[in-house]
Image (cartoon, rainbow, N blue to C red; front, top):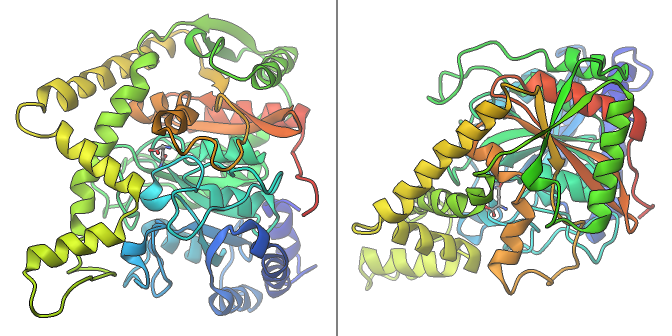
Length: 481
Ligand code: GLN
């Protein structure tokens, strides 16, 4: 059942929230040894939250429905590691704003999901706690960095999950697991309590099995937050209404911009075939396809790999062995600097170290203008590409990711091969607009994602188009585990 259906049955008391929660805890117990979507399951906390719903103490459109949270988001008293050894054992003293909103809405926080360390990666292979497996094929990656959230939803361990998207970490895992992943407008969902990777890009958002569920979850977590200075003080677009409108299957008058630079080479043939077939389906629903050129999109990946590591090198300076989690070598004979060095050496994995080094270099005196400054200029040009495209079309469309789920180990030896997974998702992050990945078919038996990108604060548009596509493609269910 979808989250919306579950919520309806809980509300009408056909099933209790405790029954729904127990069913999901049982499912986790049955399959998560193989999938490894969770780093922590909060059994007691979940059952208590469900009991409150059954006693009628909390109501709301998703009351009683379990939700899994990516482990980069703080949950009061519940371990939060960001997939890193440096935070092992840390229990945050506060809830992130979106977690607070989820609790207030009566959703049941069931556990914390696995991820690439500090959200750096596209496969979960960089998690310090071992990779998550793709429920479609346990030998393949579930995407990343939010592979745990996507796999939990795909494997029916949770009907809802929260991810974070800095360069594609909600949408790419959605694409390769056959789930729906939505990145809201930057500033549309609060970053308060989200452990920072790249503060000008990080955006929390929904991971679900249906577009309507994503819209419902979006509407619960979104909206202005005074504790996040980049949060947008405007009403949340009517994403639920837009998803329901789209589900009626009518796209008359909607203009889809086909990004010329992303429609050709670079994607696997099966991905392109599923994408083109979906585009035809949308045309049959009344949409018009207009080819648009976004000439600077080809520089998005290099610009991102200067901006994101630069911000990360600054943000990750706080993990120094003094404030949180791990401390190594504090034997009374070593200097503070030595303890900090030993802690960071032991606590960070190789990809995180690579990013810190890259970012520190890009920000260093003498190189700042040539690298970081230049990347910021490219970011502006990419934003202008989006703005001029949106003068002609309502949304932009592309495949979500160039390739289907790849086998473990096949892209870890060359970082650039891993970075290519986000070729089509990164421009949206640099611009700050919303983007969604919706399942659009299979290639070689594995899910393919269709991406819809919209102007900032027009998140409703992408939900309408995604729901229309879902109404003709249907949802995808992985082979039984
Ligand atoms: N895969 C990209 C990276 O490694 C994006 C990650 C993300 O969105 N958190 O940086």
